[in-house]
Image 1 (spheres, rainbow, N blue to C red):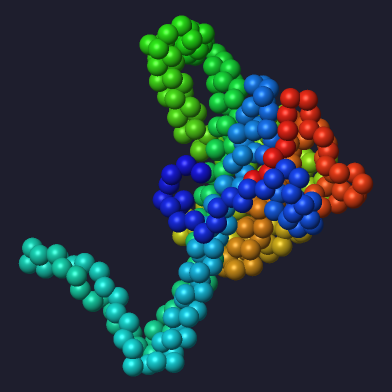
Image 2 (image 1 turned 60 degrees about the horizontal axis):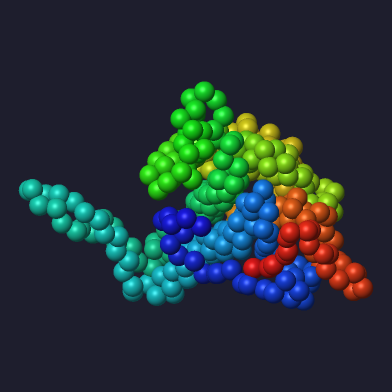
Length: 330
């Protein structure tokens, strides 16, 4: 993942496995499979699949940070309830007579401190979902960027990019030409990425999926890219409501949940917005499963259909890689 405030603290790193490691075919095992290839046309798939484990570690770390935050509030609640003599002070800064100093804003003991911790706990799941959407957004945009960097002509179409196309054709003529193209290309990438943030993440993902020519893994029967986009839109609507401090469930969120009864979210239009730990679990589970789907879809695009993970018959062995490519795991 790129350097960011969200990614500074990580509890997990990518586990590297040999291509024929038996754990890869165990039911329920984490599938971070890397497709190795010398084919420049699909080299972007190698790059993308090599990031799956990193993305998974990042999203799990975000989830775990919120899990320990919620746990800490429970522990603190019990501590103040059991030790009423302990004073909890809330400090901030205030300016008086031209001087800014640290002051006590509030002081709580015993049951009051415990009640205030208890009241804070339900809000944490809402902010956690907001943060989980943020890491999902980072993953999707990074994945899309890998694709366009591997297929640069996509961002060079149209009359306004004639200078960029000319610089691309001349980039191998010398160091100056290469530097000129690199500067123009990075500016184009930055502009493209900024514009994508306004499109709605579910639409961005759908556009990427179609442009890359991906299809769901061959053994999938119950869900497809349209379903995954709908879940992204649902999480995005929760993020929108939390970000803007809304108190009620919007019609959009209610309709999205009603159209996806199997998702497990039960928000209804007009009811008080209450994001629960269960909702947070659903979001984390979705991101994890989406990474599996992306991983397998990329590999099948490059190397053809695969047996379902953990379900290959003992005498089948592992599917041979396509010509010019190979499979590694990380």
